[in-house]
Structure formats: structure tokens, C-alpha cells
Length: 107
Image (cartoon, rainbow, N blue to C red; front, side, top):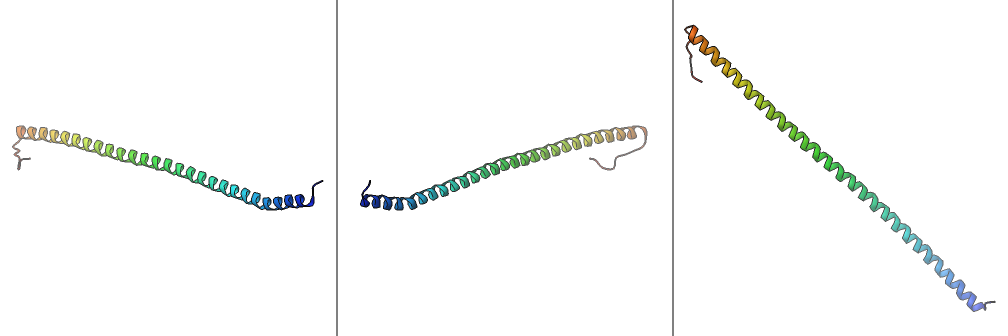
């Protein structure tokens, strides 16, 4: 059997170690919570970056679509204007040849 002094020293050691072990486990618990929070923030950051990239793509597509629409309308208007101008010239030439039509002003 152990002598009383050794038994007392072991009990004192265990009594001091229990709070240290509890504190150590609490530190690891806090560390895990912080680590989980960091992972959640990193995940949210990745989602936000993905969303920003999607929105940038959407803006680019919208801008390019609008630019192409303007180019299309401009080309169509130019072609229509040319056709009307040619048609007007044809009508004017016909009127000059077949009637006494005179142009008032030059274009």
C-alpha cells in the first residue's frame, strides 16, 4: 500500500490537473468554434465571389446585347434610308421626265 504522503501528493496532483484538463478542453472547443466560423465565412466569401462573377457576366451580356441591338437598328435604319432615298430619286426622275416637275431645293 502507498504511504499517506504519496497518496496525498497524487490526490493534489489530480486535483490540480482536473481544472487544467477542463481548461484545455475548453480552449480546444473555442478553437473549433473559431475554425468553424472561419470556414463559414470563407464559404460565404466564395459564394459572394461566384455571385459577383455571375453578375459581371450578366452585365457584359446585357451591354453586348444592347450594343448589338443598337448596331442592328442603326444598320437597318441606314439601309431603309438608302432605299427610301433611291426610291425618291427614281420618283423624282420619273416626274421630271413625264411632267413639268422641278425640284425646289437640292439635297
